[in-house]
Amino acid sequence: MKNVKIILGVSAGIASYKTLDLVRLLVKEGAEVRVVMSANAAQFVTPLTFEAISGFPVYCSIFDAQNSMEHIRVAENADLFVVAPATASILAKMANGLADDALSCTHLAFKGPVLVAPAMNEGMWNHTAVKQNISTLKSRGVEFIDPESGDLACGAIGQGRLADITVILDKIKNYFIQRDDLKGIRFLITAGPTHEAIDPVRYLSNPSSGKMGYALAEQVKTRGGKVTLISGPTNLKPPLGVNFKACKKAEEMNLLVQENLEQCDVLVMAAAVGDFAAENLEKEKIKKQGDKGLVLKLVATKDILLEVAKRNLGKVVVGFAAETQNLVESALDKLKKKNLDLIVANDISSPGIGFQSDSNKVTIIDREESIENLPLKSKREISDLLLDRILALVKST
Image (cartoon, rainbow, N blue to C red; front, side):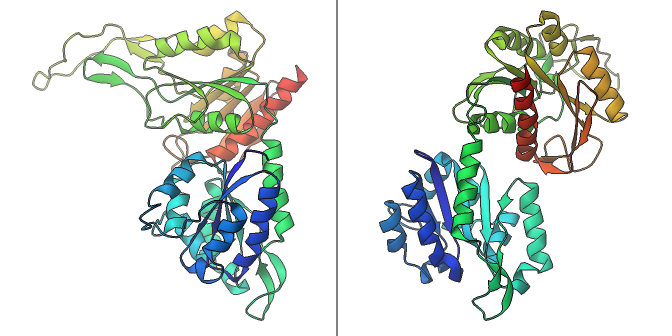
């Protein structure tokens, strides 16, 4: 784990003393560990102890005059956020987006993968509110190492004891071992919507946020692959370390895909490319004329995946299909017509998933018409599962 950057969040549980050993072992493995503590956690173990073992300042307060913004900078540069022990209180803050101390602020500012090791009384662990918070966090892609059963600090016997430090360490190490499995594979990924102008102030588009394509690019980079991300207009910040290319129109996205296709091994078309554009672009703003309507003549845009299929370059090609009816039938038709290796389909008529959401419920179909229905998962989790399928295809070619 040399040069790996890890944030260790320590909340106020009696098990916080055990994480001293976790820091020691991570440093021994070559990781750079930055510790962020809740103020109450410092009642159990002093920040100075963590500083001595990690070799870096510990952040306990957002009002520290010398380091008031340092926890934000740490969040921007880390590879993994580990919370151990995670109390019921910090789980509630994380699930509900609260940011009232150094630990919760850092979590909210962090955009990468999060690993949580809870520790609490058995009654708290089994409480409905805690279970709901855990479910919420899991839906966003947060991974959990469940507590063990045994003697608890309160004197009871049951589940709630922090998982053994070696178990947490192995989970962290395995995470980074897996992350190199895409090394040497070049990905070309598209994301976001396209904007097809009607006049200088109006355009045709769709509600795509780009979150799926950006999540894929982030996970490819995390797992050691090389990424070129071609994106339509979004409000998202490009992941660090990717070759980013911005565009607006479907025509521009097509040109960028065709220009970069030969330099990739895998093409993933996650963008929601507009199917139609105005036949004529008005040079001036179209004025409203009383109650009169407006008739626009639209023409079809070039189908990027069909253009790719014509070139027959032997790449692994993955498409996406956002449908409102006949999900499987429509996706199968697209897969065959465009000679795809995989297609990822989702029903955008279902509320709370798909466009603009951090989660989705998708169906993955391959050339053999094998159908895999995934339950509701975060787009990061879906990205990892899809990349596992893509990796298997790359290895088989």
